[in-house]
Image 1: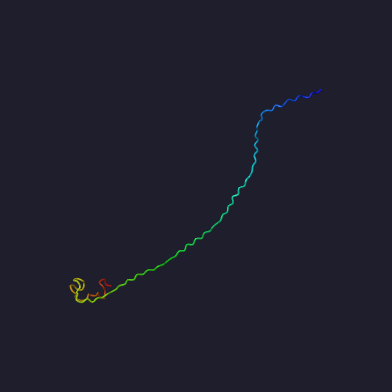
Image 2: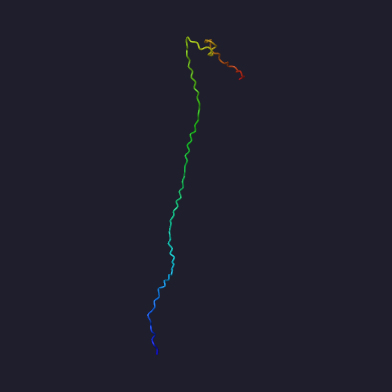
Length: 99
């Protein structure tokens, strides 16, 4: 004959904590749009020229006075003291250097 076994109350032990790590990979796309604009710069240098010529003019003025009753200062170049006559004019022939 068979007897049924006796069943005792269970003995509960403290819970053993275990950690199981599950790793998953998630791809997050980051889109950074970029646009390039090419700007061509044309620079015009306008150079203005002002050519200039130059000339020189010499202007000579003569004024004659008739002075009565006065004599030029001595040694003024009119032949010594007093008027003494007209100034000698240079000759029209060859000069002292043969020109």
